[in-house]
Length: 196
Image 1: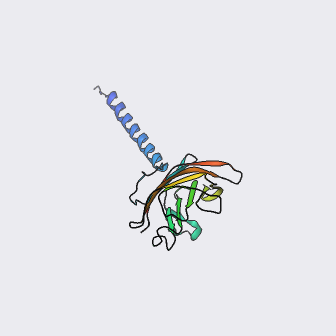
Image 2: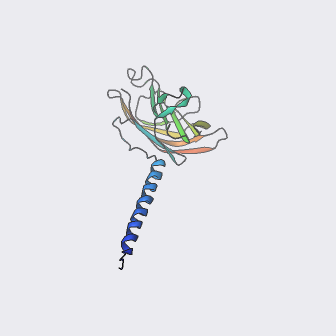
Image 3: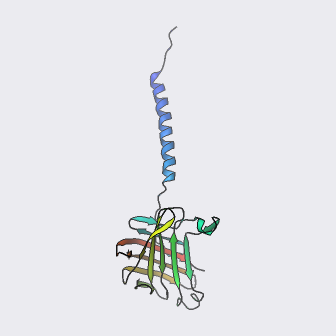
């Protein structure tokens, strides 16, 4: 008795299995290397922020902060305003802190504006005067290098400032410098926060 084999069907079956395994492995690898994407520029109080620092995207990301006993969840986007910020129509402190605690390597950014009572362009001043932008380069979860703005090295454009709704939105860009005057570039910065 002669057995008939269907070799093309076996080949297709094996190729299908191999393709499935290949794509399954590729999908897992893609999930491990998640790419951060800047949020849209909005003025709705979306509580979003982001910037490209030296070609790398920084967006807020939550995680566990091991500096506080290993159990405190710290949000990746912190907005700080002075106690009289709303009642004085911005004649008090405003600061924005962006960090991605999911990433052990990357950057953190702190923007301190100080008095914020009108829309339009604001340029950084010399430290310790405000406004100022600080960037920390993070390696293995620790800030290894620090960069600071200089006089007019960064521009912050406030596009919306509404004390009734508590929405503050804007964009920013410029250069920050280390202690040896080496610069890194900030571009496509944006924030849209609601403080009340």
